[in-house]
Amino acid sequence: MDATVVGIDVSKDRLDVHVHPGGEAFAVTRNGEGLDALIARLVPLKARAVAVEATGGFETVVAASLAGSGLPVIVVNPAQVRAFARALGQRAKTDPIDAAVIARFVAATHPAIRPLPDAETRVLADLVTRRRQIVQMIVAERQRERQMPSAHLRKSAARLIKALEKEDLLKSVPGVGDVTARTLIAEMPELGRLSRRQIASLAGLAPWTRQSGKWRGRSFTGGGRSSGRSALFMAALVAKRCNPLLKTFHQHLIAAGKPKMVALIATARKLLTILNAILRDKRPWQTA
Image (cartoon, rainbow, N blue to C red):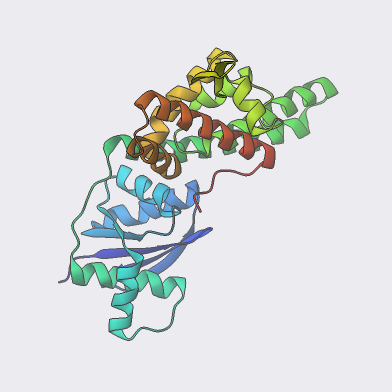
């Protein structure tokens, strides 16, 4: 009997799943609850491989969550899957069909399982779990707010809901954990209301240059709110490993010959710019 292989087609809002060779097909939402349901269904299958197609970043948290649950995850190249589909004469293209083709591709080609780095898996899996907890807290607090008898208590609940919503948005960014989110909310309440230059200056991450006449010295960063800056540095250390955008940004600076500290400062500044835009637009992080 052929070993079980699972193919998963990842889109913005859902995951289409196909189990080969049994032919079972189903879909779950692409959120914390959907991932929990997916893991609960896949673990008993004892599949040889669970294949997720790379889709510009949407697959990252999915792959990390599955791998964090001990499933044998493979992230497959979409160009290779499309070539395999053409070889099969498969011209129709829908998400369920794509999931089936992914499963058949892995069953036929036997690509090697390459576990995600432990640190990256832990960070991303924890991010999914923590975000779900925050969303549940927001829902519970909104229910309590409607039942509170006094305006004073309702205002208190509204303030907590607003803080939780901000934390949820900030923690949607890979690399931003509890400490960073809460520190920035407490120490930099202006976040989301200033321009990128203003917020960088407030955190002491805006470069400035010493100059006198024709002499121009090196650029420096400093000043600003040290507690927020320290939290951003710690987040940048994590983000340069697990955040696809900031990882590429940091590697580009290092490849260009920038000193490691300069690259880290620039990564922290870019992270701050991203967080500022996320709170300004009230939209969570998206990789694509």
